Image 1 (cartoon, rainbow, N blue to C red):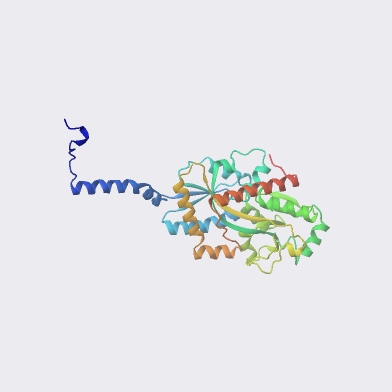
Image 2: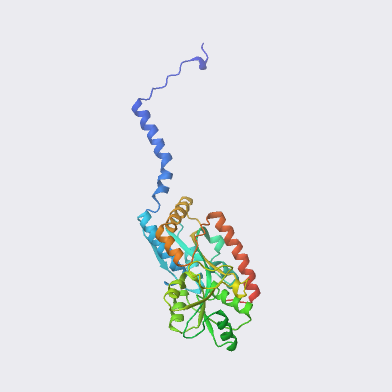
Amino acid sequence: MKSLHTLPVCVPALSRRHALNVAGAMALAWALPARAQSLWPAKPVTMIVPFPAGGGTDAFARPMSAQFSKLTGKNLVIDNKGGAGGTLGAGLAAKATPDGYTLFMGAVHHTIAPAMYSKLDYDLERDLVPLIQVASVPQVLVVNPRNVPVADFKAFMEHVRKQPGKLNYGSAGGGTSHHLAGELFKLQTQTFITHIPYRGAGPALQDLIAGNVDMMFDGLGSSAAHIKGGRIKALMVSGSKRSAAFPDVPCSAELGLPDYNVTTWYGVWAPRGTPADAQARAVEEIRKACQTDEAKAVWANQGAEFPNLTGPQFAAFIKAELAKWAHVVGGSGAKLD
């Protein structure tokens, strides 16, 4: 008797057509994930902007949205959700369905908030995934020229010191970079200027232009057009160098404030749980949108840089910012309920 392994085994031969069909089906199965990825966005994407229209976040979100829509053929819909220094919109974004069709455009304010607010209904690092940092601008001291009729920073300081507590500054809200920039300025110059918080930089700027507040420590992105239009006057930009967009405005270092280095930056997050392929595509398309000639012109006009930090780099930057602002807030004694 022959052993089993010596017996001939009869296997029906696959026809050439059937073999090709099987191979094609396998190739299609392997291609499906890549095809699904390439389809994003398959419908409009909502971008939650946690401040009213007219502020710094909006000043970058809207031109970025226009370029995104042009490149992808799908709208990037700006949904302004202002309130509580930007934390209301952040909380809504953290709770949004993580399907790849809700994004969040936050800013430096969101790394200040955990140290300022005793209670937040979200955790920036736990509930949101950092995708890409899209803009960075210096802070600028701007005044209403009718309320504060001074020629330069030196005259401004004399004006402020003659009237302790009588002048005021508006901000985008308690715990925002505008607020902390104002408090840091007061500490370093030993002056007293009253803080008036608003629900976003847009409303604060409107009141500054109207003369209802005297000054702001604003991000250059939202103030640039009003400075160029002569509606407000810039006296100083923060940091160690002048802004290329406003070369006649001195920087804080040359005015005797070398440690006054406050930058407003903006970035895009996704709700935790957003599919990895949608995250990757969002980063890719947002990067392209920010690097079009049209976007570059807007960024340059507003004195902004495009940092292009993504993923782990952006996450590490956020962690460092959280630690830095916790130290600043602790030193200033500022706190919000």
